[in-house]
Length: 410
Image (tube, rainbow, N blue to C red; front, top):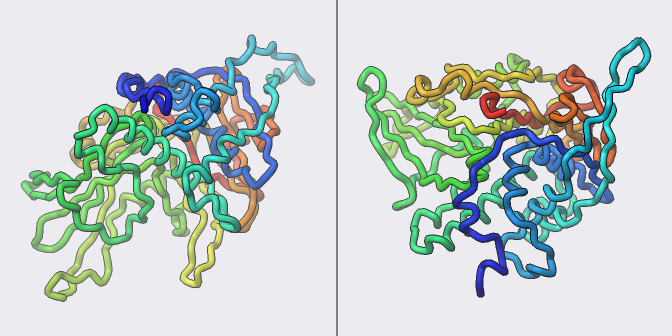
């Protein structure tokens, strides 16, 4: 069986160059005949993400007839999705409105129903397809990015079947930071000692992070360091596709507050050594590697001990231009990261509407380069809005996922 007829040509992805240049696409709404708003909202944010659009346009489009049995259903479906969008027709002329205020008009293309994307939930076994569970746009984004990443890893394996490293999946694991780190598996992680500031040594563990174009766009690393009295610091590098921001504390009112809280040193209670002695340890998380596209997840759904889930409705302020301060970075990368490498601009916001954690609705605001302005997309409805409407809080909808891209790549 030749791979060329059954999946994406693996050599194609080895030579791909990520293109960050924005592209002016004619917007199209997405028809929702089921409970698919969480998927539609995510798809619109991904279409508005230039490197993702260019990557999928770079891969050839095949029809179901040409490739009935594909080994890359997710890549194929996203290539098909991006090919549904075409460049914006000649920019619409600004028309004069009352009071000589210029109104920018936009003509969306026909809305369509991306059934082949919805079908992926059953093709690739996912808990998201179980009936009666909360549909979550952040979980769905993870399902997509991990799925594309896995398919690309499998293509790499075809090129170098004997490469042991490729058997390790390195997609970001869905694991909260406060869980105990597992012991490194044999041969799966590298350990090295580093002499840090003030000649303190620390042991760093890192799984072999195999790169794919998806990690090249969305993949960052956080460094989690455990400090224990009179023993070496132990650090673990963990990959992420979305940076999880806890917003529960009353002190957290802005994205900046949430980022600072993420890197604050916290003491870990009840930690005992092998000899059953309780020791004082603390943990600190820092940002080791920032991706070109940084997705911030404001953790609004809080699971309670009773098993229920509550939604945090509080307003969190977020800027259009975000600078990741040096204080958030790991010591080893502070000096290497110039300001332009840690300055980001917002290009999409996914909102959750309603006060309930088990229902509600999702919509997306996206930046449209041809318009040099913002669009609000609610399933098949597309309308032009002002930038202040994107950052302005409202009672019925709360920002849930913030999509930023690095300004030096704009």
